[in-house]
Every structure is written in C-alpha cells, then in structure tokens.
Image 1 (tube, rainbow, N blue to C red):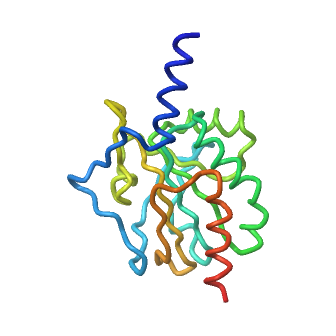
Image 2 (spheres, rainbow, N blue to C red):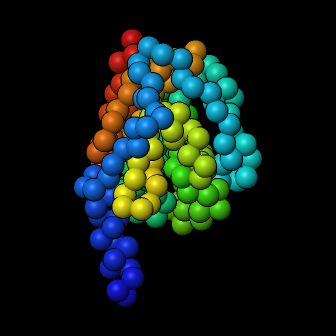
Length: 179
C-alpha cells in the first residue's frame, strides 16, 4: 500500500508539472511552420509506425509522461472519446512516451484505447521534438502536442497542456484550420 501511495504521489507531481525539468542540452522544439521531423517507432501491437505513413491526414502527435498515471490516462481517454470526431476531420491520434511497446499494449488493453501509442525508450523522437524531460532521476516525455497538417508541416504546438481539456482544444484548432 505504501508503494502505491508513493507512486500516486509521484504521478501527481508529474501531472502538476512540479519538479519536472526539460532536458535542453541537445533539443530544440520544432515550431509551427516547420516540416515535422520524420520518425519510425514501434506501436503497442509491435508494428513499426512512421510519420510518413500518415501523409494526407492531419496528425495529432502528443507526448505524455507515463502510461497508467492519472493525467496521462485522462488525456488518452479524452482522445479516445473524441476519436470519431478526429477521424471525421481526417485526423489520426498518435501518442508517444518513453515507455516500452509492451507497457503501451497493457495500457491500451486496460483503458480500451484503439489509437496508436508509440514507444520511444531510447528518447530519439522525444528529443527530436524538444519534449524530453526529467522527474527526479526518471526520464519522461513532457506533455506537448504537435498538430501536423496533411502535407507534413507543423501548424500548431501546445506545451504543458491541460489533459482534461486538450482533446477539445485540438479538435477546435483542426476545425479552424480547415476553414
């Protein structure tokens, strides 16, 4: 019980953004107007997923700290809840954390998630997108989202997002940009 309470306390701090530092040594966050850095990472089903495979679609590329934590679960549930709305707008949801593909598989199974979660335990893509952070001695992905247009260009960036309302923000941005 004490281990769970400690883990819950750590998760709450991660959610609140307290004590999280962004590793700035090698990383620069790509900005709106720039081409999205390409990548290939394994998903929860073990298949390799490339950003290039989504050409012609809007891509919601969101980075999150850790599977099975409160804020990350809320954010994932809200994206899942709104998935049909994103699909109607020609968008795909892709989550990335430093967790393993096996952790993602368990998280998706437990939480009923059907969109792609990509594993980046070597921090390559997290670093490429300026989203590598540290919580104590743990390396995590910082909660940032990149909206990528159907041509592969970043059109909007959110940093330190509120997981409770983020899905609606992204849907509104896609709707506005499609006008």
